[in-house]
Image 1 (cartoon, each protein chain N blue to C red):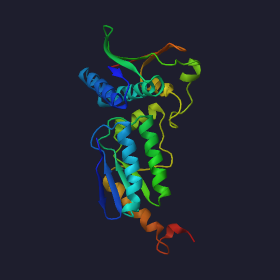
Image 2 (image 1 turned 120 degrees about the horizontal axis):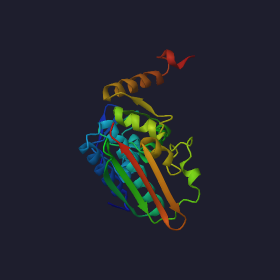
Image 3 (image 1 turned 30 degrees about the vertical axis):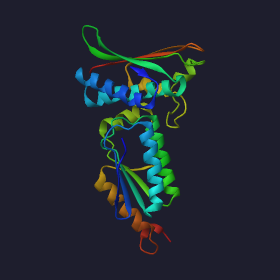
Image 4 (image 1 turned 45 degrees about the vertical axis):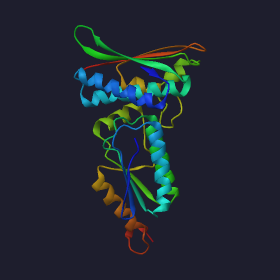
Length: 129
Length: 127
């Protein structure tokens, strides 16, 4: 099942609709990395609310995607990981090192907005000069 | 269920979740079962190319549960203690993820012979 990618402002939003095969995950990763350039996006949100299972392959693909997105100059945040999925991830020993997460789409957008402000020179205390 | 393509991984874990839910497992428990099946089915596709996942119901008089058998005739595992040793993370996507599967489930058994294949049997009891 192909994951629709929505463009909103400077951001791309990919919302998982159903269980994903490994190939679906690869297509999502490659599609997002390509579209970051095409739409000159500054942020990417991957909404995993409907994800049934986060197994080792899905976690690795998300980590790869986050790093690739950063290499392309955009920030990525994962939102919507459900409590039972989070619990399974911990039991399985999965980590999402280097990947930003937020509770839901609203928090994800707020996170990207904050990051965007922080990056703009001279306008933020977070640049610490 | 035969397992040899990536799409079979999703089908197997969906069946597992359905069975667990049917037994009255909580959503969290059903997700643990589905995640374990996903890892076991992935091992088959990755390392053995093909095999099967068999799901069954358990009833020991007091408790009910789900049993998952993952069987293949792949290359086998030369060093089982190493493969199931805890403390290694599956997050690199390397390794078999068996320690993780063991943590997800209540019971874990493995038999493997090099050149013959591997059978993993895991059980989860309803709380």
